[in-house]
Length: 199
Length: 289
Image (cartoon, rainbow over all chains, first blue to last red; front, side):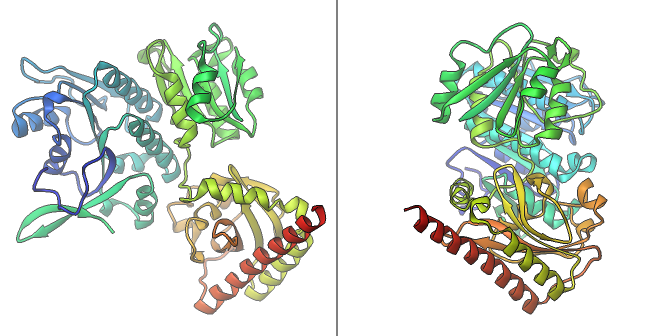
């Protein structure tokens, strides 16, 4: 377990985790590398950060990539990925963050593929709910996230979803919390940032 | 009974699908196979739990079908089970949430079962005791209890007391809210995703939305906007066993607030409704024994 995470948080079981913070690379990699990369299949849905940043993140943190990595991005993102000689990495895109049909299909496609590959642990990052809700209303966004978290639950995945609380009405955040097993937020002690369970 | 509408112009549902779903969900399962958008839309009803469709149907696409079903039955799960490649799928104007399973290969039974079991395509949160709450609700059939006149009187009294345009007693069932006593409005039912009470039954407190237009949960509701409603206050109707089956509510066309005394009074109205239902249920049970 990483020292970024408070001991009070039980990470011993698969879960859907909501991360209340501006997109944070350390937290992301901390959650994604809970198991050894070679023993995991990973899905990253990113409408904020470039896919290459995730590949670099794995390389920097662990020196290797997941056994299989699928990245779902949006159309204007670069499609040139440098994953090194051994990376089994796929990138697919949708037209825009508001293309829920496209996202639903791309995510479903990726999860079916990862689930069928073998019995490796599936880890997931969804970055982020915030731009999604700039295009669609809360109800529509709730349904979409509900459907993804439901699918992940059946696959015993470790998944985390980012949302920037400063960009939303508190009532929106309260509503979204119902979809997650655990909600965490950053805390600072003597300048060091770690993660604690949110109220 | 679980009801699934299966739209595919060529193939029937996979052999053994009914049995797989029955085993996964622990309930009897009925799968109705249709080959067109039109046929499938007609087959979908209040009790349809899930619609599974191949992308290309003889008179349109699954996305045409899903758009219509989402509009008429918003709680129904939609599963796209197709061999069509992503690049050939035209999303059209209406982007929507669906579960996708590639055909062949994907475990469609598991995805359908989970979407039904956990109701993963709802657009609103459920109370933690939803299953028990719905069972409790079946014991309080308001039509049988003949409460409407009494509840109409109570809502008129409340509207006058609070100087509100509207008051109502709403019972929140699995997919809709049933208005079983009203003053100032005449709604028989509304889809659960369109009602504020859906959020009111999530906890015990009196829920006050001082200005609906500035609350992100409701500000995009076309229905509330069309009705010009700005203020909502509701007290949960909680049964003896602690399940919140509905709300006693006030609505108004201007933003406003409620003080603590007013909240307490509203709760008294909700308690009165609960007691009326309980007493009538006991009397009725005595009559039939």
